Image (cartoon, rainbow, N blue to C red):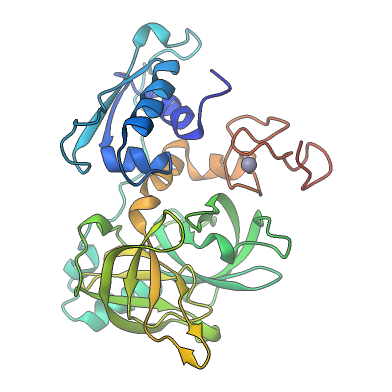
Length: 348
Ligand SMILES: [Zn+2]
């Protein structure tokens, strides 16, 4: 594999190699986002196509195609580039991971009232602890995959922890392994060795509209499983960075970070991330920001495909949060020296 491929291209190449037909569809918006772009321009389309060309992948992305960024583009691996060492799967069909809960599941499982729906969300909400702090998190896969904020799993030095403590709703504790995180988008994914957990279905945060009701669950100030309610104040709000947040007036306080934000149907649309407090004495109120779950969906699917146990075994870069298939000396994503390869925390 070309060592200079950007991480999203390397990941898609790996995925296509694992597929008998070597094809995949994804929305143009998601593809642009995986490269860190919110909009389509001549420059970024050219860059993305060039990257895929080097990986022998055809992508039908152009300045005017697809007409809408919500429509899919097709990625096709040039079969002549498929290495002989990775033949198409044959023989017995290997069973994939069980499907994630369907949207609206919490509202459909005989739970007519909002109190019942939120009770189920509370059951899927966890508290995350490190040596220097903690926050909240939400179970997104019954096989033990948890979504939280990157800053919740950061150590004092700003490196991500590899292991943290997770408390579940029933008071039990688990040691969770951090398997992926993102500094800019401020999310992290953790795995606990548990099965058949109640998970919150992943909703469609791209279709969210202003004035829709949302609920925030978490443990602000250690007040376990507190619930607050509000509306979507802005479905997409760009602040100081290129990241587009969901803005809500539902209360988010310290300790809520990483906890679920759900619709009235109990579908996850994001995680609590930060609050604008203003300058004293002109303190601001009700300006809270949520990382939309659509930023994270690709990573969730990737981890499920490689297997959560395998993800825990793979080398993880505590600087940038990238998960490596092999054990390189330096991180392929950010260039930092990986733990175990020498003095921790130093860069080349
Ligand atoms: Zn890295």
